[in-house]
Image (spheres, rainbow, N blue to C red):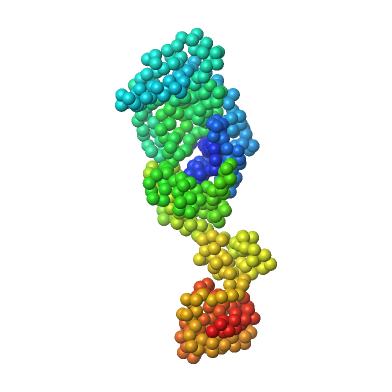
Length: 504
């Protein structure tokens, strides 16, 4: 590419960052890093009515947790700053004025009541009201296209409310190109004259994002499909200013697990999965779940988000962030929406669980479980190594490994009926004898001695192994019995078997 690649992620601080937004940030980051470019974070806070305190901080922390670091943004390398639109508002008026001076935009003084009347009048005739070439100069609408220059100036000086609208061209066909969706044709006659600037001194998204992308030298705009209908206006604005437009790529929607409709927080609440990267407390005190707090590894979240709309063209599914950067290609992003699969997200987390060091997981487990406060983390790590294959989250560890740390105080009723038979007491007593006499206390040696005795005496393995497991665990579950015996030691093993014998 002839120019250095520069992309931006431009969220609005109106609440928590949805994972759809995280995916947009991720794809921008991957594209930038793949091409040796810059990834910019810009906060688009022109809509002050919807601004939520703390939302910007939440956005930054979410990206940091995911490992999606930005090169420029608020309080970081602000060479094109500031990076909050509310701090750039003095810039936008001059560009709105430039469009008016060039006949590309105009003042409109219509009140909301007047516009409502126009809509209702059109509806009564079975038509749809669009503020554009069709009616902007017929006299019913109040704007600078029908007013004299003096009348327009007088209204502004009198403090009348106004907006600045873009003057969409008539009878033209726009030829647009999207990296993901290919060539698009738009008849300009169906476009409305969007508001670019409001009388309160704030621009709308359409003007601000075009100006900022130009001034920040953005080369590629990678954003959600919901902005596709705005592509025509944005291209027309670039043309109106005489600027080169960036290349555009509109990402597919993330769909509900059913495949119908856009994924929402309500879907997560209903089906029991988070849709935000971090836990979020709303201004009213409502708490929403986050992937971090639910026990997901950030690498797993990034990996499954990458596969929502993109595929590498191979069977490989597990990718580090570095591998994603190397393999990412917008040409392999799908047009169709990507169905969100909660079970697949858990599968990814399970895969990353297996890659973690046992000691690291043990430290997380110890911090999570009060019962482990006084237990050596190295001992915990041995247990983790034996059970993590069956776990998806660190929070699963206690149910899978509690018997390494505490003796059973009761025995599963169904398992007891299955395992305890006539003669079980005598068999368990002999197991006690074998364990007590074993001096080389290793897993292999214990297994050889106990299984050798079972085989030599032609005893059914289940007659010994089931009650032995019940004694150690309290149920017929857990890793290899001899691993458990080795972990808890000789004295504790004998004690647990004796406890079960007392219950028989």
